[in-house]
Image 1 (cartoon, rainbow, N blue to C red):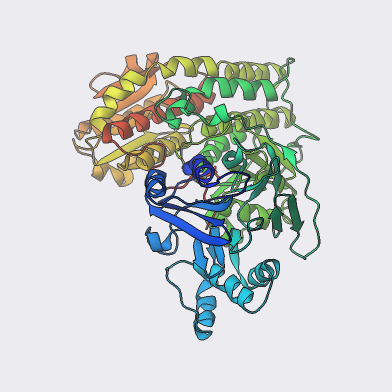
Image 2 (tube, rainbow, N blue to C red; image 1 turned 45 degrees about the vertical axis):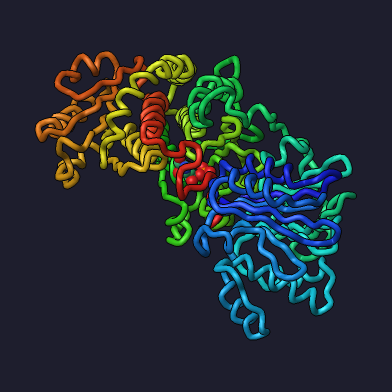
Length: 606
Ligand code: M6R
């Protein structure tokens, strides 16, 4: 989603703004722009497409000034075009925005009645026009922003810059996160701490409803009731190196390769030397829990679907799952003794956050499994469990998925222990099997060449099917999502037993079918479904282990053979070939692997 940055600096800010915007590229965008105030005058440059277009424009038409704001836009209202790119300007006000102003049509109509017209199709320009209108009526910048915010409905992170004011930015947060950075005689504002990482590690997060008057001397923050708010600065550890490609061609490749070390770090964090699972604070009481409700979006929701098998099998704990965008409007009853568990890499996904708020007064406890420890979802939970994947920059989630699975797997084991379903030996054996995963993933990463060879052919396909059974069904869903989001090939996943109830009509020799089937208790059944595909000429890629390949590898188009893994934890290992196939298929197709079209890393609008 849109990225915001602002700098009150001591040097020229245009290059710093572009550099900070580069660090927000991972969020997804289709145009970019910056505005500065110099000798009292506001000016801006905007360009469609990648940041390099904005940089080129700045070479020909430089922008001077030591105070400025910048933006990467992910189009919601109005096509990606220069006139719709941010910063928007009206008279003495320039503004950048992430979110959606839901009542912008009414505001637009009202402004039209005042004789004020728009140049763009965006909701954001309305904010600039409103603020400038109040300035023209004699308000100070602070008053103009306060009056403007009072008229807005919807979700926003906003950052204002004013003509004639070289030591002032005003930031506001409602629904979309904003961080204020403290420098040495400089101040910054960013959508997240990653944007500000090279500039400062001292960060103040605005709370919901806050707005802040920022000068080089500091930030004065008011809460939604207009009271001065004390929001302490924290020192955030985001090492610039963590957001480098570290020699890899893409962030996605780096993030796939990092999985063994990230999983090892998470295992060390959560599993004590005695083999017990360590949770922060009072932990989670699974023994009295009647039901677990899990809510998430996209890849995070597939992690929940895998975990459902674990919680039900290991702990006999009933689990409901819903994608957040459906859950929040269904008004589902939440029975007593329900814990609501939210899974999110970014911790800022608007639908997941709204679902959490829906559960706030209904569920007994709100638990979240997040990657960004300072995120809104983490902060609004009773207990937030970090997955410790480190910054994930590639839009396609990889290491966050495996780390989410690991943390959820540990929770399911703990639930099994507390509910008396797992005895000491069974528990210890399963923890040990989890500890084996980083090594097994390391082996699996050596399949990258095979994956590349197979992907060259997958890249020719128009449609691809993924099949899996039991715990591997959500993996099939994840494999299909990964492939379609970065290669743009249409991919669907089915529980393999469902194939004959309709989707088998799609099978022909031009539709590769990828079957995820470790040699487990469901293997024979999956293979029967695979045979049904082969009988109809469908080329099958079988992803399995040695025994599986021996038993069913004859006559398939291709086989990828993974190391043996405890069947329970196979979804964590089998995520890796799915990622490698998607990655290499995207490379073969020449798509933008880290920033695929139309997608945003952190979906902060509905
Ligand atoms: O940050 P979140 O985990 O809440 O994001 C949820 C989805 O938007 C995300 O997993 C998305 O599906 C990924 N692009 C998948 O690779």
